[in-house]
Amino acid sequence: MLIRKITVLGFCTGLNLTLGTLFFAQLGVALPGFAQHLFYKAGVESQIQQSTQLVITQETPHLDAQQLLATINTQREYSNGAALKENQKLTTVAQTLYQEYKQHAFTTDSVQKNQLESALKDVGYTYVWVGNTIMVGPTTNQGIVEAQFSEDDQANTLTNPDFQEIGVAAGIETLDGAQMGVVVYVLAQPQTTKQLPKENEVVPATSSSAVLGVQTAADIPDDEVITALNAYRQAHDVPPLTTNQNLCTYAEKRAQDLIAAGGLDSHAGFKADFANNTLPESLAGYPGSRFGENLAHQYCKNMTTNESFVAETGTALIEWCFDSSTAGHKEAQLSTDFTNVCVRHADNMYVVLFGD
Image 1 (cartoon, one colour):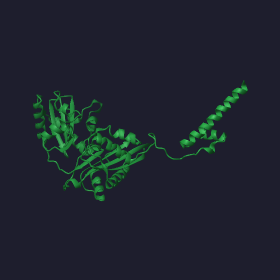
Image 2 (image 1 turned 30 degrees about the vertical axis):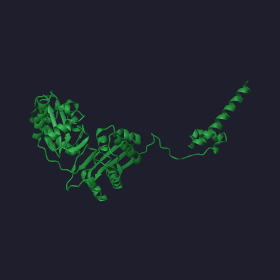
Image 3 (image 1 turned 90 degrees about the horizontal axis):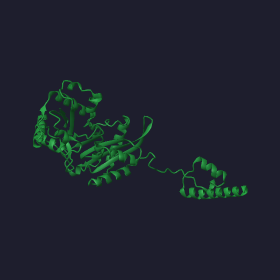
Image 4 (image 1 turned 135 degrees about the vertical axis):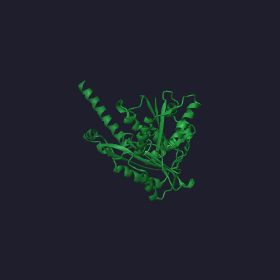
């Protein structure tokens, strides 16, 4: 009986080694250490071709600019936008900005308007619209794609129909002891479609993306924006708002925050000022306890028609930049919880502060 069991065991072991040899030979991958030892002891290791070729998987840190561009164009197709064409000059600019970011540990606001303009001038690229954005985090193509399209500002920049060409620079970096993926995009509409003006303005979407545009928007007075806001509320049978000096002082502070941030900061400064249930010093004397903030740039997008435009009147800012928004701006404008307001602006960026 024992001899029979040993015979069966030996048969099964031999069968597994033979089939295993054929499997690994066809698969063409390197064997784990313990498997190498097993096949060596069995005298069949030499039959297996060892391979050191890198196999890219979802888990392997790897970013490919061409694959990222293909995915962006797929998303643009879903948004009824034209595919972006890779431009070598913009790729060179993206690589230049990548190195600029690297010198500052890839902080998203470390590249300024003049650095982008200088890099474009160096390669001889003239434009109607141009923008740049950076994504830091995932180390795989899939991870980067999921991250960039889960953020509205990133997604809006990459699918903006005004852009026609793109340059991409991507790499894996070690930050604070951990591997991080970094992708820099430079997107543009070349000058061939419109005449380039003498002056360009910076129109940031967030601190990590910026757009340089052809049109220097006409300044809209703060009072004009408030008048347009109250007319908008009246049209919706909502009582008008009263200008409050405490709100004005704080709104001015927030406008300066936006300048320091290099663009609309997604309310980061507002949230920080109210952290731990404390009031900013300028609002210490305000009689209410509830506040709201709307932010907009004169270069904005009508979310109803998906068209980008430059707002040049208070009415356009209120009724198109804010009204068509899907981010709660319209709700704040028509809220009956608020009775006071103030508007302040800087560099074509507008802060609308609400208070109860």
